[in-house]
Amino acid sequence: MSFEHTRAESAVALRELAGFPLVDALFGRRSRRFAMGDEIPDGPLAFRSRRDPLPLTELERMLVLGAMGGTTGWHYSITHNPRLAPHVPNYSAAAAGRTFPSAAGVHTAELFFTDDTGLYFFPTRDAGALVDPAAEEITAELMVERHRGRSRRLSAERLYLPREEPYLDRHNHWCVNVPGSLLVIPVADIAQHFIAVLCFLAQNGYAIYDDVHNRKIPGLDTFGGLIDIEQPFPLTFAEQYALTEATAELAAACYAGTLMLQAMGLGGWMFDGIDRFTMLGASGTPKVPGLGFRYDQDERWSTPNPTGREGVFEAYCPPHYSDMAAAVEAFARRKFGPGGPFHPDTPGAWTDSPGVRGSAQVHDERFKACITLQAQYIFDTFGKFPGTVPTVFILNYVQAHHLDLEFYDHHFKPGAYLHTHATHLQTWHNRT
Image 1 (cartoon, rainbow, N blue to C red):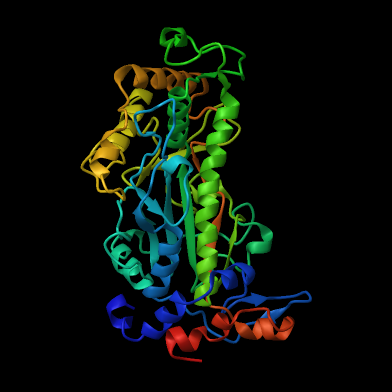
Image 2 (cartoon, rainbow, N blue to C red):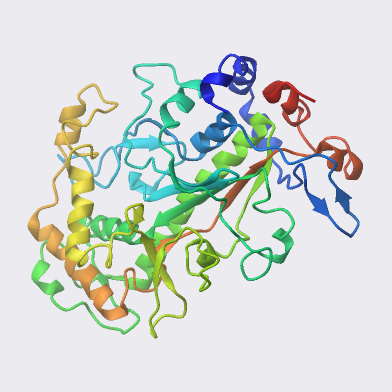
């Protein structure tokens, strides 16, 4: 169903959505897994739905996606660091803010999603500010209008997940990726995030050492004055830091989505019970391609290492770049090139946006050489980048679906769902 077709019909629903209290979303949030068409075959909560699955409309789908990954204006960057003064801190890698926070505005996560109409990519991290609160009122309707052209269809089929282990945790066999549902899949580029961490450390005078092999990185002593080579950070600590920061980004995106579910009266929940290797294309079974990411294996690694899908989502490392020097250069272009957060022609939220953005210190050749030396050492030593954590990472997912209220009325006390759930079909679909 097109957004144009539902604009007039959904005016009341959008007004109610805009007025839904945040505290009600927070205090009313629950994992509500039982969708129309579901069945729990046995046990104390056994129940068989009498309703057919009801897919989300395009409007409903776009509201969930916009909540999880929509751009909301130009982000404010890091304001001040006396070590970097008079330059503005140049940690960020994207110019626009999104509905969820990202450490220092690095923004390496993107969304994929699947429903009955296929598998899609929903890129927004480098889209710029698709809405601007300095110039217009930001409404749910405007967010849908500005973001609905972002989706890129990758397949006409719903993503296939066998209802068995190891693909799905056993308790999710009956309820995950069911007909009518929307499954949203945030993915983070840990390689890119770790390049950002290495840059952050160097900007503050630090480097890393290889604590796995208990040795310094050869050649770092030539960068004295830029970094303190006598007090480096452990490699494993720095890589875990990057992984954790990026995972927080994924989780925050999912939590934003769950709050939107409460406001709209949709069922669903945030969870992690899908095997991430399966989802990233490393199931080892051609019949279960997941997102179709390339992956490699090496005797030095305990698990396969997916790195991306060519032309769609490519991690900042080989084989998608010739070497780590090329990946570091690409990261610098993302930051300082056209559309980047530190290009003077990129619009911004400040009264003197060209002056603020243009005041950032551009990574010079010596700085990039320092980062590249460390990154290439890791890749050469461990056969991948980062060396001790995954190159790309998935943890949380969000599923959205239409609740079967009869299940909750039968098995739960009053209060198991919100007023928005009780009235959703009438409000959003003009049906009971």
